[in-house]
Image (tube, rainbow, N blue to C red):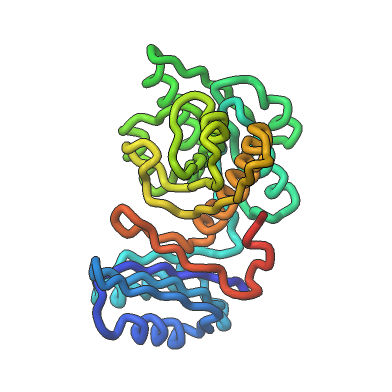
Amino acid sequence: MTKFCLRVTCASTRGIVSAISSFLAENGCNITDSAQFDDSHTGRFFMRVSFRSEEGRTLEELQPGFGPVAGRFDMDAEFFDESAKRKVILMVSRFGHCLNDLLYRWRIGALPIDIVAVISNHMDYQKTVVNHDIPFYCIRVTKDNKTEAEAAQMRIVRETGAELIVLARYMQVLSDDMCREMSGRIINIHHSFLPSFKGANPYKQAYERGVKLIGATSHYVTADLDEGPIIEQDIVRITHAQSSEDYVALGRDVEASVLARAIHAHIHGRVFLNGDKTVVFPASPGSYASERMG
């Protein structure tokens, strides 16, 4: 039996859960996992339901039938097949730790995605990518050709049918137009220091200030640089005995881990946009033993 998922967002009101569960039961479906959240501050309701069709119903049959329920509650509703792999494009510049980590997780099946292309503004990782039988595109970006470069990137997105772009340490700022067109479908990763250091060589700055925590934040990309809705975060503790090289190595590890977990949550439909924030439902126990990958 194929495992399906239903994602729902709407204004909070009575009867939503009952209506959804009744619809699924009436259509021969058995709920295997369910998570919901009622945001009292925004008045929005979020729900994710995993279910199996025990009578052989397909999504093409279920989706139209759900229309009256969605209309009654003015829902944004999405059905998808949990076994179908999402098409993803990775973008990278010259720091390869996140790219290599994602390629490894993809190769061993820990990250169930279909990597349809890797785009870079440098040639550093061409051989690595091609050796994985993945198309590699080098699109140089300068201040004079940024519009043309992004147009070329978006052509690849459309031609491959990519549903998600992952900035695996891609060190170019995306335009407002690209951010708007791919809203909720671009994930980025960046370091997080307490306190924060920007500009050149942030790890060296952190070392010189004796930072005790290094973290990473993965978020959706918006026109506001590094200020999009946060999906996943983590930290690692530093001691006075560690070198600036240790800071870099530990920072790379936590960045790679956080990015992989953010992607995993997104492709399984566990992330909901909620204004400038996100609602992220945890994976159900036993559904993915290694979900905290790293």
